[in-house]
Length: 323
Image 1 (tube, one colour):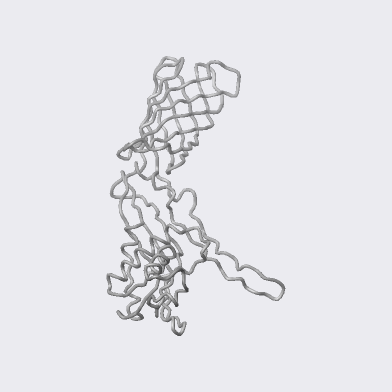
Image 2: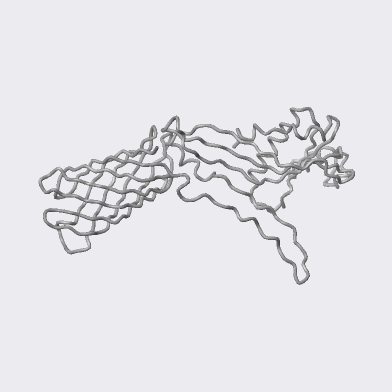
């Protein structure tokens, strides 16, 4: 997000500011907004930009200002009595949207394209007259590549639209709050990639076998169809439709993040001369590197009929690919 903010372009403000202006920067949002970290980051970058362009920016940080006033020998006076320079222009802003999103990288399947976005409503105000000199939306974006193995670490920073605090509107019968905007969210499959997973399986009672899973995957879930075949003389087959939920584990040192893989599915199991539907439960540990997901897991198939032959316990070693 810092790299996105560093690209913010304030040139559209130039016709409404001169180098002799004394400028203060403030947020339009109410003081009880819960997005202080992003506000602080935005104010820092806008202040740096204005100073680099040669403008005079006055300090108005609520935590820093009392210390400045005390250094002038004053004890918590009104700002107008503090002897500090009074501003004649104000730049006010509201955060409308910020964050980043992922898109498939068609040129490099082992990485994703990450696009950062910040959208601000910015106003320039003449403080002597209260006149709005400028009001417009400024949008900044930045794009880079992120390895698939690192995408889970940024999962909580997708685009977020900020709902402003609307003023109370008086109607003929009561005081009502203006409705908030309804944001159209992307569908669950918008960020999903095609997923394939060849498997080596050791099944109790059947020995070694091979399998494969195909479907769709994102950072926290997978939908797959699975086929297993035993190489033993038992001719043991299993077909299953699975739902996986991935839980990110705490990072260990400099190693990439491990994930706990939980699985539930519907299955159809064939062993010897018996066959029956059932359900499949699984648990595993997954580690991502170079765009591949190395997995060690355990699956347990439970048939819907009473048959010891159709009960199965599998140890599964596999490599998953998203593209």
